[in-house]
Image 1 (cartoon, rainbow, N blue to C red):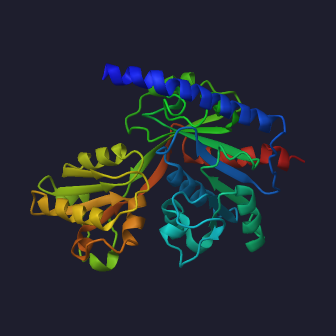
Image 2 (cartoon, rainbow, N blue to C red; image 1 turned 90 degrees about the vertical axis):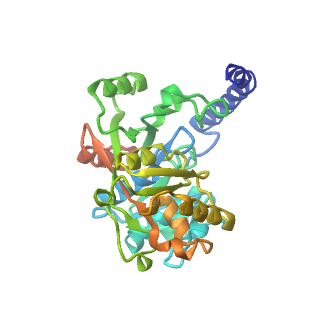
Image 3 (tube, rainbow, N blue to C red; image 1 turned 90 degrees about the horizontal axis):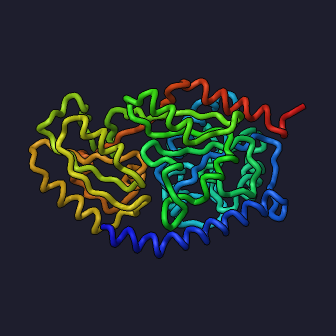
Length: 365
């Protein structure tokens, strides 16, 4: 273990320093106007992070949409990570995860015609096309776009995970940071996500002191609320179990293809069921051999009463996967999640977004 750590320091740390210098030069080019930022005359809300994956961007985007939908005509734009398409794609009822990406597909399934959702690698071009299609848009949320500085945001929101905070991380490839922690200075709001249910006042103070934000920056804390089991294939599931009823004699095969499944697995283990975890890479596209393995693992579960449980993000890929065994369709469920803000409360976060919008230079009288 010590030898591996030494090799990591000798090989990866110098590369991370070079990477950091490159990112610093890029940021300076934006600050000095050598690289141009495009401004828009409607609010642009950027949700992003400094670390690679797993901070909970999609549930927080969903929270913002749900909170502000009654007051704004909202568009959501992302690059559509790991989609099979290129360029600008507008979501429609015919869209599939491979067309727009699994996370965008999940958002569209929830909000459908109430929002305009699109994917595009070029966010400036994506915003322009969205506004041509729907001239009534008066807010666009950019999902995972903090490093995409070609768009000037009205509000920048950075997420950092409670168990893997920015101030304990290092730059790629030695650590997981896309940018130096100094980039946090560009954020208007910082959210510490996936907080434990029993977070103590001392933990709040540790984050406040370690992040050391400027007075104009607002710090929030959030956690996940897990919902009831939902069938992935509703037409195939005659009975929907509840965690309170299934009991410790039940075995659960947990299928995850997310960056950090630990909070999800911890939640399931608290339900006093026997958990068998099969972990895949983030955004994994399930193959026929994957599905054969899932069926085998399910058959090997020791209990007579058994289920397959997956995350909401994985469920949208499984639902559209032609290889999923038909005989397991009545046994597979997902657990929806919702974001809950703690310490300062839900209203403070939404109000903070609107306050920042109205204080931004685009909207000053």
